Amino acid sequence: MTKETDSREIALDILMEILEKSGYSHIILRQALNKYQYLDKSERAFISRLVEGTLEYLLQIDYVIDSFSSTKIKKMKPVIRTILRMSVYQLLYMDRVPDSAVCNEAVKLSVKRKFTGLKGFVNGVLRNISRNKETLSCPNASVRYSMPEWIVSMWEKEYGRETAVAMMESFLKNKKTTVRCNYANAAREEILKSLQKQEVIVAESGLSDAVLYLEKYDYLDSLEAFKKGWIQVQDLSSVFVGEAADPKKDDYVIDVCGAPGGKSIHIADKLNGTGLVEVRDLTAYKVDLIQQNIDRCGFKNIRTKVQDALILDQESIEKADIVIADLPCSGLGIIGRKPDIKYRLKPEDLKELASLQREILSVVQSYVKPGGKLVFSTCTVNKQENEENALWFLKEFPFDPLDLTGKLGDGISSETLKQGYIQLLPGIHPCDGFFLSAFVKR
Ligand SMILES: C[S@@+](CC[C@H](N)C(=O)[O-])C[C@H]1O[C@@H](n2cnc3c(N)ncnc32)[C@H](O)[C@@H]1O
Image (tube, rainbow, N blue to C red; front, side, top):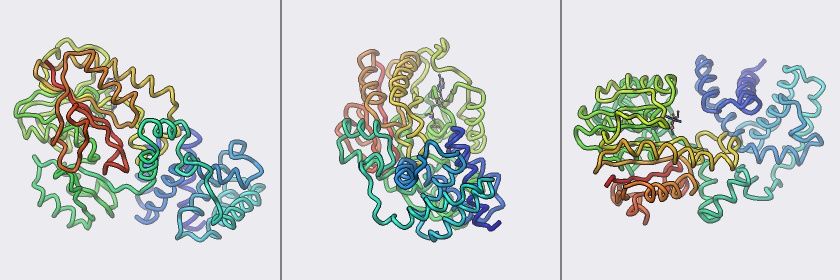
């Protein structure tokens, strides 16, 4: 077997786990890349791109296969279906791989997986697609951007056609890793020097002093700045939660749904050794993830607790200066990083999640002291879970909107900041899709 076949076989196994056994793409891919640490950096990059690209374009790929195959994608054997899907991604989107190599490797893989009888079928479908690929066209936006139709229509209705297209285009672009600096641990110059010493390509965000974009590193765990807790993977949008919360010296902060701890650690960093952040989550497993991040950065003003946010914690009533409610949501804003979300989600999930958010908010609002703040956020893009819930909250509870004008930096402006909220839209704003609202208790 050649090196090329090995990489493709690893990608096939990863895609089978995700597409045929419903595994989460980011978890399955991370586990596989950890397992195959001995591979060249370029081979691991090839596997990641092949897996992520196949998932990003899955609807379009299936449309193309169904246009050229007499057996429809749904009726195929799972292994053959997956080999075809990943091969079509290479034909359409990986210019550096010659089409003949894609077809040959797909045939070899089919034989290796004991489908010798189907090698002619695989070869025929792929060669046919390869011959006609310049003339392929997409019948609608759903196929073009590989986005389920119900999401396309919802976004067109809620944000307009142009914005919906900008969002869908942005999800298909390559993402750099975004990190936030823990300035309580190291100065900016020290962090930049360490990253540059390890030949990482670093770019400034221009929108937050705390945020950097990283490229061309091998493993995050191998970076000195990461090992020493000087940097934390966190999107710009999520950094805005800390900016909106704007903690003051000695504040007591409760983060009610906090794993893996990104926003809480940012707030602990801002408190610079003072105050206390209590980060909670539903299970010991999730709380352990938070603890690992806390241990790495070594902050002492932060602790964890297993606590169901739906159950009232009597001892917390009117104790917190700030409550962070970054709640479970449909995740439509982070499709660019976790493409399988768009295929997993059903329209009815949004309603259920919006009502779960209301239930959690009803409980945790009681933890805020009079004069204290509550920040409600989600990493999704739809009115039901976001604006509608923020407005509902203001009607139901004794809170006023916190004017966020100027709090998120000069680069972010919106009429709604005055009313205490903003819907960040990928492709329009330079970050993931994210909703953020902030309230002050009367
Ligand atoms: C959006 S994530 C939080 C991300 C986190 N704020 C950060 O910045 O790293 C939502 C979290 O809510 C947790 N969660 C879901 N239901 C919960 C509940 N009833 N009580 C507490 N946490 C819950 C999930 O386990 C998940 O970790």
